[in-house]
Image 1 (cartoon, rainbow, N blue to C red):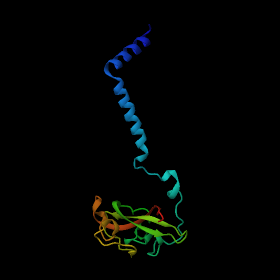
Image 2 (tube, rainbow, N blue to C red):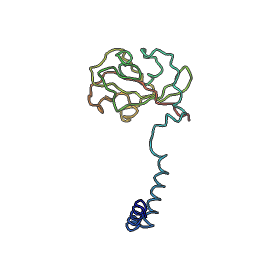
Image 3 (cartoon, one colour):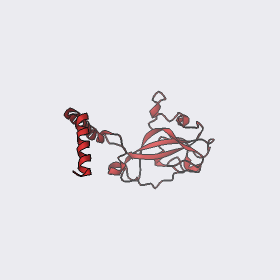
Image 4 (cartoon, rainbow, N blue to C red):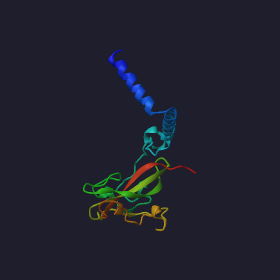
Length: 173
């Protein structure tokens, strides 16, 4: 016998002495259940197409309070503070906690879920104050209220301005 044959025989005997058919079946069963549960894991499904595939048409002025994305915003617009409606100005960080709203885009007539993220870490911008409370809820429903300092979940609790990020299409009833 050559060296490869001897190595394979020795390895096979070693595995056979330390394992069983039940162990093999248990391992196969675990692998099958694990593989079947992969589609249940929470993942970003934006790459699959669907609601997120096309961005909404934007023809409004994001520096005014009448801009369609701002239907539930409460604060200073980042568009007027050195950022955009999607990003924070330099020197600030986006809050990890947000509130959401559902706004209708007048250009396509569709409802979009908007995530309102505060930008934290610098003093208040004090430009373009906008307070639109469409569908606002009392503070006992914190996830539906815009009257909370959402910077408390960030490294700095100092509020600067607010962004309005489109998360996707709202589901129709």
